[in-house]
Length: 114
Image 1 (cartoon, rainbow, N blue to C red):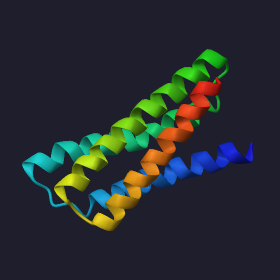
Image 2: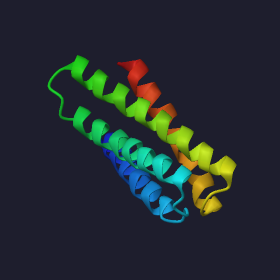
Image 3: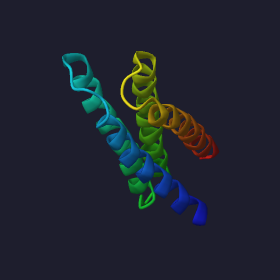
Image 4: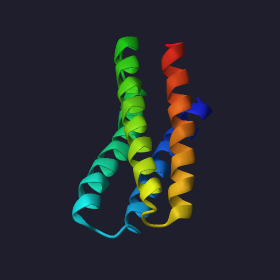
């Protein structure tokens, strides 16, 4: 049970850190849309995982974790776009790319075990 709480906390921290990182990026026509999409994906990953923890059935748990994984993949993609564009605080961006890659692996592993 402790490990699940750690993952919940990591997903929460990831969402908050992504939002804080996005505050370092100048708002342009191009960045505004990607920023909105990243906020949605980063927060949805954690929210869906949290929801999976209270799901009454195994198929529902699997569905929610699958959505969480999909959203983390999307987050990782948008972060890599910003990284290639060298947008905002690059140290933060690099850390977020690394964390989202690790979270993708963890969520995929959980999903595969279900």
